[in-house]
Image (cartoon, rainbow, N blue to C red; front, side, top):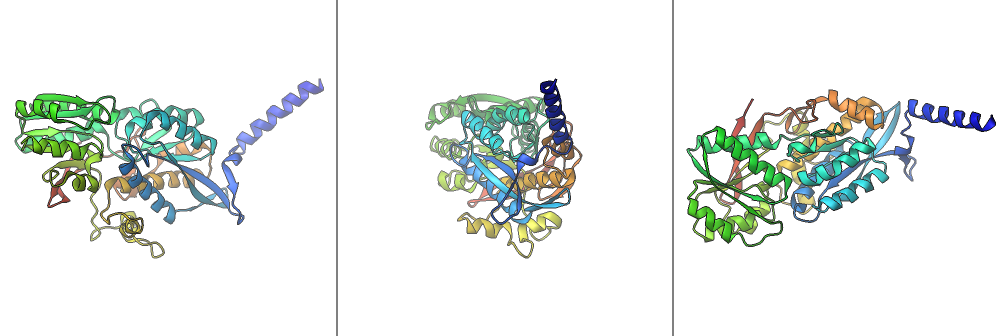
Length: 398
């Protein structure tokens, strides 16, 4: 009887811990005596997508510099970041996710790259840890996963925007280049093709390449023979300069475009002039002269912290602000505000707060639909002119 009573008491104690917020294990105390909670940063800092991943990390870190104290249950907690490198690899992404779970982070920001986000998603879901994607645009990231959210628009929308760009510029013959096995590249390429079919645009060639491919001349020769007016090549930062340079070497003169991953200055630098005229769709265009609210804080600082451009320079980076850095800032801010609104570090409470969240961030008004996707209907189109990305138009599709 005593043994049965002991088991019953243990069960009651466990239930009482849950009822009182059995999340105490998710908090620690610093050497200075501060109560601490951790937000995980799940990003590629190395590998094929490391260049874009670190740009998101900078945005997340900068947001944490400004918003690093939160009130939970009447007590102040310091918010620290715990960063893991998913190395742009799906297997490493699982390992990175497990490290975050073991560290007992209360939420996660990331990742750049849809494939790694999809690979880790089930682990975050099982652990009941809310994750906030920044620029992972493939629909599968949040599909069927109530714990994954994101601050960016999606690839079906992005593909439609680029197809509309082609239609508006009189391109009725286009070609597509995608990377085999890459969720982002293949997904965005397919959505672009479907949108072109609806817009009456003829897709005259579709070519695919393997991961880590260096020589694109064979597939580019096939595309040249099809004589397109536009080539859509959604791919990584590392691949882009090779495609651009080799296309121009073969005498391909038509405009070449891609999605958000190509808005990166290293592509222009490494393409050695071949990027001139390339066009991209992206999430954000900085305008310090008209910035208000959170965008003004991001661009100009808050009196204690200088603006984000200055921060980038301090990190040895160009001062131009990448759109994914702004999304990283907004992703962190969304998680921070959800923790604040929930008044708890419990994953379910934070997830519930995210479903009701609505605020104006750097990249615009942010709220989430039933799938966890941001309610966004606008994309920026930029073109490389004189070695710089130049804003051309804002495209809205309802």
